[in-house]
Structure formats: structure tokens, C-alpha cells
Length: 505
Ligand code: SF4
Image 1: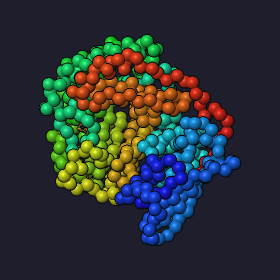
Image 2: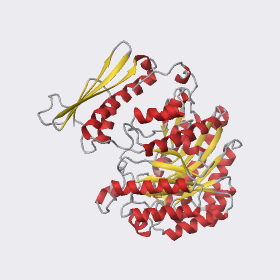
Image 3: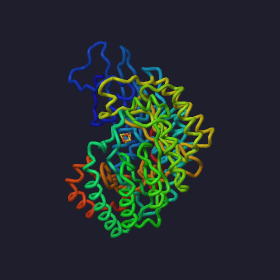
Image 4: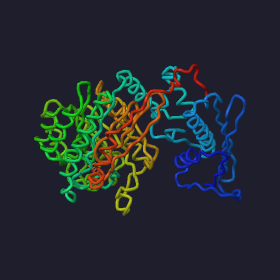
């Protein structure tokens, strides 16, 4: 689509274009559109009290004009300024596009990865839950089903925030190895068969990073609220390697205020009784056994060399420890899967009664091998919708509640990934990480440290190398970064404390 902007917020326009006109590439020609061509004119204008975003959309020969505006005083905070203007630009474009298309996506005008932030922020600025809900409905035009999800997650986020204290952080440790590569996977993780030689040197390097980061944290007075060992597949490590890693974590960090310690077991074909016992004995209280599907044909199509029976066996092994709570991941929309097959997978997982169930929707990203051959048929958007609707009903009936969610770029349809939990069993790490409630110190392969300034919401990111070989080679640099890490100081004033909330609509 031809785009004509009088402002520099191309990204806001392109995100909305991608969500509403998925096949249209953004073009920025100098010449005006020719007769019959679709185009968008997006502009910002400033008055005494209001800033107005205007969108004029030319679509199939007709013109649609819509506006969105915000109070000028909402722009006084430098950090907020860009966010407010982009929101207005998106809204005006969305409203014009909704008029032109005659239908609206389930997430309405929201294009971001973290939709829960909006109602949370609104309630923190003094709106009641009902007012925040109305705003999501009337301003962002979120559908009833997504509204229920997002408000439930906002409740969980606000409740989690109440329990956080100053100087708490989460600790993430990434193990970038897997027993084999799943066809849909976009994570960078090395197949252990091909990179077996790298596992031990990687672990040696990681132990050094754990000791260095532990010493740094003690110096800066930060405490660890939650630990998450993920990947990749941490249980690709042997039982004794896991024991060394978890022993180093226990020796290096003060875990006296840690309320949640997760070690992802992920792939059922890596879980043994010995590893489950080590995980439980070394201090973790939470793990995951991720079937993704309980259909053997779908598992084969994904390139996962385990069966549904292996999932049941692995689940039994971790439950036998007596102390590990369990998350299980399922994916709606896998290649070759059917609504009936997905319903069966969900029902089987529900019958096991894990504390958490996370329902993902297949998101195709660059790097996923499913993109490279066109070998598999993906279920249609309607079929995926029926899978998700079934999941929401069945999970709610079984007593689970949605507590965190995120959307992904390149996600098929207008879907989302949702974490569900039994009452009181929400993962504090998942909420803090997803809603960026506090800093996350990340060690190991592919870890991204996020230093969050709680007063302003500003985030500084520091990435560790993704590949094991690169990680080993760059270890001196990684250790120096950890030693000299500078934590954000809560200097800026929170906008929540600055009086009446500026209006935008
Ligand atoms: S086990 Fe998980 S991280 Fe590893 S390849 Fe499969 S989906 Fe990716």
C-alpha cells in the first residue's frame, strides 16, 4: 500500500498495515497514487489543547477518513510522547481500515506484543476495573473473548506486583541445546548430537558466569525473587551436569527470598528419574513437560522423536518426586493437526491435572524449517479458532484461569499465547518477565538481560551470544559485562503520581 506520512512514526503505521492488510507491503512513493490504487495519508496536527492524528484511507476506489486525538499535556513527558503519538496514529488508521473492511480482528486496534500492559496501566492511573474494561472495548475495540483473557491477566499482573519488593530481580539461565530440532522452532538451539563436544566447555563457561554474576549481585544488594532455567532444553544436560549447575546457582546467589525456582524439562525424551530427582533435590519446585501435541502423527510431522506415551511416562517421573509442580505446553495450529486431534490433546493433558497449561498458537518465524519446504499443511484460521475456543471453555470448566499472555510478530491469524493456572499457581517469573515488572538478569546461551527502571518503564537490554561456540569464545567479554553491570536508579517520577490522567480517544 502506498503510504504518505507527515510524521516519522513509520513503524506504527506499518504494524497496523501488517495486522489489517497482511499481504500489503509498505511503499513510500513521491508521486501521488494513481486512480484505483490503495493508499493511506497519515498526519499529525497540533492544536492548543489537542494533538490529532488523521488517517485518510483510499481503498478500492472509496475514501475513509478517521481521527484519534490526545490532550497535548499527555506529551509533556518525553518518554510518553512517542507512545501517545504512535497510539493515536495507529487508532486513526485502524478506524479508517475497519470502516473500509467492514470487519475487525479479535484484538481490535491492538498490534503490540503485550496487550495486558494497557489495562494494568489504566488501573494504576486510577481507573476502576470496569472503566479499564470499557476503555479496551470502546477505544481499542477488543472482542469479548480477548477482553476476558486480557482482564484476567491484568488482575494477575496487579496481584503479582503487590508482592514485589524493591531490589528484587529474576534470574534466567539459558541452556542452548536440544536433543533434536523441532520443525516449527525458531529458537537458536544446537542439536546435542552434532554439538556434543561443546556441552562440557559451555557448562564450564556458564559456571564461571554464575559465580561472577552471583558476586556482582551480592555487591549491589539485589535479591533473587525467581529463578528460571530454560533454553533450549536444560534436561539435555546429564543428571550430574544439572547437579553442578544448580549447585553453583545455590552457592552463588542468596535464594532465601526466592519463591519460585523452575527448571524446564521440556522435551519428554530427555527426562529421566535421575534428572527429575536432581532437579527436585537441588531446590527447584517447578518444571515443565511439554507435549505440544498428544497426537503421534503431529509429533512426527514436527520432527519430535517421542510419542504421546513418552509424555505420560515423563509426567509420571516428575510427579514421583513429590515436590515438583508442572507446566505443560500445547500448540494449536500445528501442521497436520485437526481440531479433533487438538481437543484430544487438551483433554489428555487436563486429565493429568498439571498446575499450569500454556496454550500456544503456532507462530511462523524466520528460522522455522516449516517455512522452507512447504511440506506440511497448516490448519486454517477457522480451525485454529475452534481449537482455541475449545481450549478456553475446557480450561475454564476445569478451574484454570488465564494469568499471562503475549502475542508474537508473524503469529498466524490474530492469535496469542496464553498461560493458564490452577488457583494460586501462577508463575511469578512468567508474569514479571512478560509484563516487564522488574529486571531479569540472564546468563547462558541466548539470555537477554533486561534492566527495568520501575519508575519510568525504560528498559536496557544486554544480550548474551545465542550459539554455544560463540558463547564460549566471547566468555571473557560476557564476564566483564556481568562484573560491571550498572543497575537502573529509580530517578524519574512515575506518571501515575502526576495528577489527573490525560485523556486520549
Ligand atoms: S525442544 Fe523446544 S527449543 Fe528445542 S528445538 Fe524443540 S521447540 Fe525448539
